[in-house]
Length: 344
Image (tube, rainbow, N blue to C red; front, side, top):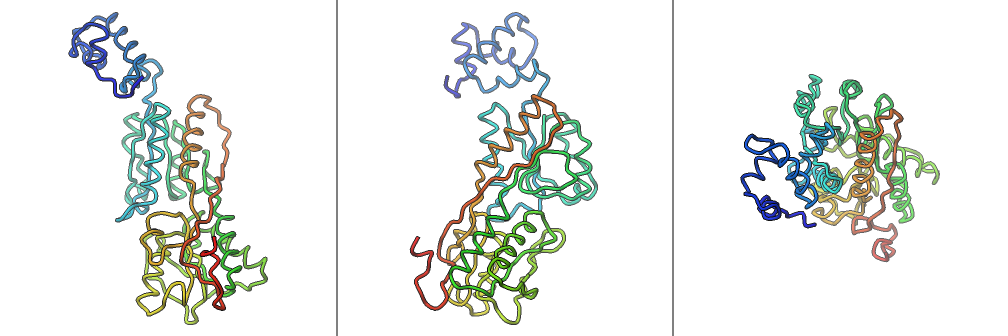
């Protein structure tokens, strides 16, 4: 049936007024219990969107999932995680659940305050999108509903985890730079900030090791403070020929910095990113980057949390979803040969 079924459609089907339908679906007085039950059954049969109310009453579930994003991961243009939430909400809707977004403030995270949607029992589970503090993870270990972490992991987290394959994504894109003749390659990202950045750095480092390139400590450049706020990128005295950035937003910032100093990308310095978000498109030139499979990660996270709601089992698993390189214009082949990006 169509998802656009209205109370008027149900009323026409049963030969009663829309007011009667409204009262029944909202459990208000003025309608007999027998008629209420009949109306709810017909509404569910017709695919009325409010059918979660009937399910909730029957099963003792809210049929809502809270999606928590730390506020430091919400940006002023278009946050990668807010776009991620849109995909999650769509998948939840397909499973007859609703996603309730909660932005976790820095104060609430520091003070270990759980969102009101938890205390008010408005959600059956929580999806945590973006890395939170260890203390907050310890707090979430004590909640009485399922939790799934997305895009980061922690050994102390007693929950399922869905991550992108950060290690191999950056390993492959660093290999791409080396195939283009680059051997002086920097990494931009605070390697103590998140598990994702750490794994991306390790993928970069593995590529260097395999090609017998010595890691230059001067080429490991910080991009954010301990609270995740972006800081001014300080370039080394001797500029490498290429940079691997831990995300597209940082790559965009780096290109702006290089341009302000008179350097041209990619002619003077190649830059690659990670995520394939809006910053990869508004960057000039457009970024070669690793695309995160947000759709598959969303499906996996929703599948995990719903399975926990059904089974109540305490066996945790970590699922890694592979991304792919998107070749654009930000990589230059050294020695003036044809850019590999252009040939793909």
